Image 1 (spheres, rainbow, N blue to C red):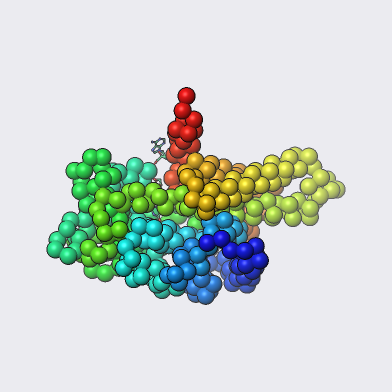
Image 2 (cartoon, protein in one colour):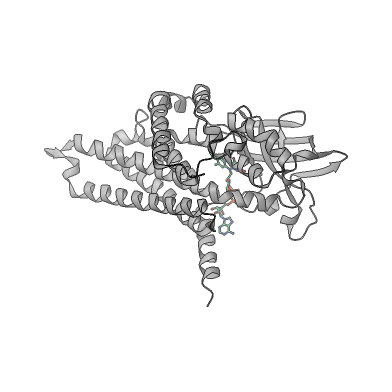
Amino acid sequence: MTVSNDDEALILASIDRFLERDVAPHAHALEASDTYPRDIVEQMKELGLFGATIDPEYGGLGLSAVTYAKIVERVSAVWMSVSGIFNSHLIMAAAVQRFGSEAQKRHYLPRFARGELRGGIALTEPDCGTDLQAIRTRAVRDGDAYVVNGSKTWISNSIEGQILAVLVKTDPQAQPPRRGMSLLLIEKGPGFEVSRKLEKIGYKGIDSGELTFDDCRVPVDNLIGEEEGRGLNQILAGLELGRINVAARGVGIARACLDESVAYAQVRKTFGKPICEHQSIQIKLAEMATRLEASRLLTEAAARAYDEGRRCDMEAGMAKLFATETAIHNSIEAMRIHGAYGYSKEFNIERYYRDAPLLAIGEGTNEMQRIIIARQLVERNPA
Ligand SMILES: Cc1cc2nc3c(=O)[nH]c(=O)nc-3n(C[C@H](O)[C@H](O)[C@H](O)COP(=O)(O)OP(=O)(O)OC[C@H]3O[C@@H](n4cnc5c(N)ncnc54)[C@H](O)[C@@H]3O)c2cc1C
C-alpha cells in the first residue's frame, strides 16, 4: 500500500524518535556484549514494525517497499542488527501473505504483525547456502503430519524467535530438484532443537543459530500454499523484497559512515587546519557521498518497480550489489578519515566496518548478483 507523503513523513518521524530515544543510547553497550535487545523489541511491537509490510486486512501496516526501504535505511544507520530482527521475519510473513492459503493467513499473519510470533527463514545448511537445490533437510509425509529431519545453519531470529519458514525436500528424487522442495512453517516444539548460537565478527545482538530437526512432526496444514514442490519458487519470489531491504541496510551504513566522517573532518585538525580542507580527505568525502546518493537512487528505483508490480530482479540485484559495496567502501574510508579513533572500540566506525561485509553475503552473495544482472541483460535484450 502506498501511503501519502504526509503519512510517510509521520511514520518516518516516529521511527526517528524511536531510534534517537530507544536505540542510539543503548546500541554500543548491547553490541559490545552481544545482547539481544529485548526492550527495543517491545518498542518495535508498539510501532508495528513486525507488521510493516503485512496487509492491513491481517493487522499489518501494509507499507510500500519504498517507505519500508526508508525505514530500513534509518534503522541501519543507527544499528543494523535491529533491522535484522524484523527484516527476515517479514520475508517469512511475505511468503505466507503471497502464497499461503486463506486459513494460513488468518491463523498466522495477525500474530506475526503484532510481533507475538516472531521468526525468519531457514534455508542455509552446513553444506550449502547459494546452491539451495542441494539442501538435505527432509520432510516425509506421515498421516496428517510431516516428519522433518536435518539441520540448518546461520538462521537469524532462530533462538529468540518462535517460528521459521523452513525450506525442505519433500521429494528428493524430483528433477529438477526444485520441484521436490517445499516451505514449511515450523514452530518450536519437540524435535526442533537450537544446537548452537553462532559467534560473528559483527551483526551482534541479533541471534544466529544452528538448528537440528530430529523427527520433528509438523502438521500438513503448515505447508505454505498447501501444495508440495513450490518452496524454492516461493522463497525466490520473496528475495526481490529481501534484496531491496539489504540494499537499504547498505544505504543506512553508508550514510552513517559519511555523516560521522563529515562531522569529524571539520573538528579534527592537522597542520593548523581541519582535515576537511586537505584535498585527499575531500576526495574521500566526495566519493563516499556520490556513491551513497547513487545507492539510494538505485534502491528507490527497485522499490518503486516492486510496488508497481513490475519485474525487478535485475533492479533489486543492482541496488543490492551497489549499495552493499558502497557500505563496505564507506566504512573503510570512514575508518581512514577517523585515523586511530576509527579503529577504537569506543566509537561507532569499527562497528560499521564489522557489520558492512555481511551485506555482501546475505540474500544472495554479490557474486551471484552480478550473475543475475548479466543473465537479465541478455534475456531482456535478445540479439
Ligand atoms: C550473519 C548471517 C546471517 C544469516 N542469516 C540467514 C538466515 O536468516 N537464513 C538463511 O537461510 N541463511 C542465512 N545466512 C546464510 C547466508 O544466506 C549464506 O551464507 C549465503 O547464502 C551464502 O552461502 P554460503 O555461506 O554457503 O556460501 P557458498 O554458497 O558456499 O559460496 C561461497 C562462495 O562461492 C561463491 N559462489 C557460489 N556459487 C557460485 C556461482 N555459481 N558462481 C559464482 N560464485 C559462486 C559465493 O558467491 C561465495 O563467494 C546468514 C549468514 C550470515 C553470515
